[in-house]
Image (cartoon, rainbow, N blue to C red; front, top):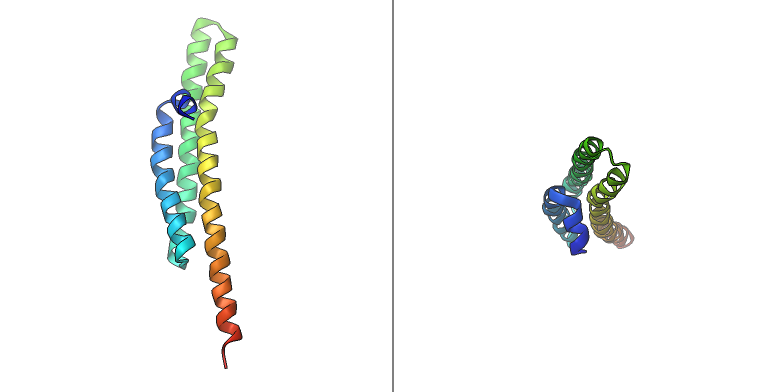
Length: 120
């Protein structure tokens, strides 16, 4: 995991920080589901995805320029592979966060149906 983080470069930092905010919000939603938290989660999902994509794009730009100047296609492949670690991190974070959302949604629908069956 540490090697993947290092290979991904600077883009891993904002993706990790934003991802931690998203995961914490998803955990809070799993514990106490509210409509307001779900809106924040949706917005943060987009931000984390774009952060991972931005890390990939900037890493790819740097890689392709350097490989082109050196005339080495093999370096381009290695650099693009390293840049994909940003996307991988973003996807792992999104999967973990949305597991929390699924739990919170299940709890919320369970509470709603429980209150419907006990109504007079």
